[in-house]
Length: 334
Image (tube, rainbow, N blue to C red):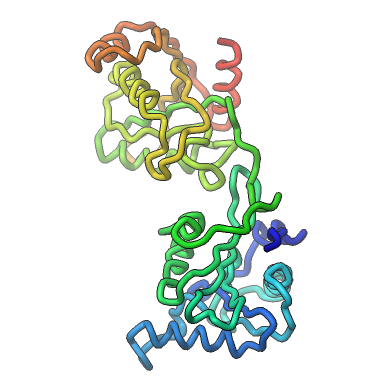
């Protein structure tokens, strides 16, 4: 099985300005070496399995047979065609009000063999991984479990989870690996404090959108971004006290809980970010805290809290636009 290659225009299409969508996005169903009949059969099979029969509303279905008038010898040809079709649609349509539905641009379903009812079908998906777009496939997804792809559209599941659940083979090409891993780069903890618990929660929801991260929250795993947002609810004066025991927990459990994968970046033990907010949850001030302590994580939690209270803390004000660059510069100078 040959590794998939991203078409040259794929990134331009995905990252371009799409026409406005009307209705739900739909995974398109293609088939190899056959007319659209196979795609229609799969669509009807899933529709019948939905249990609502004639009440099944096509406008709200999450998939749709592709209009396929070409012989596709393999998935790569379908991948190339998919992006040619998207480029044509996005170039010539201002919106999808006439069609009533939007093609899901990141992925599609392929029927690769006649025995798809027993052996399942293949899904292909594009994801941004560590700043680079990759394309991967997952084969042998049972027809009865294809609705997991609806969760991918709704961002309740990642396509990597789908691959882990079923079959992630055939993904060893250069366009399947994502970008380079930022090994050895520092990661910085971010505390957010507001005038009240409600204000702090609002601020925490806003911080991820208003603080720039050069590696981005959509492109990298939580353990690999430059900024690690903490969810503690603390008064301003407790940040320094909280950091040593919090740092100790991260060092003693260096795993990203959501993915159970090892952290790639490592948290800086002395440089922190403290974001203060107002009652509306907007950022009112950003400070870089530079703490002086011995980074000994084997002490008790109470001892670590006292160490935080007793340590010397240097505070530097910083604008959001230059935050990460300033942190990295300070880290190199320490």
